[in-house]
Length: 123
Image (cartoon, rainbow, N blue to C red; front, side, top):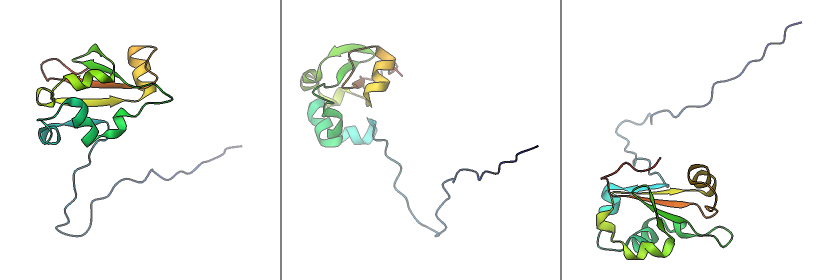
């Protein structure tokens, strides 16, 4: 006896059929970079994140994200107040599971990765 299964392919995103329609580029919620960072370059990194992605700063169950600077552990979230945003090229947020998988235990609050662009951002 043979059993055959039929499946539809997953829906794919189709271009807008309306001629001339403009779409805003998809903004990644876990990354802040480029022009978006340039708008807040006069702030500390903490204030820039507060303005652009305040959800990065919310702890999970009383735990807060660890901060990594160019791939090295820099400190706790309070250390973001010591850095100016104009020296940062990319800010990336990792959830608790991803941060723990990448860096090991102690990342219940996730991680915030800062890159100056001089060194590759830890992936």
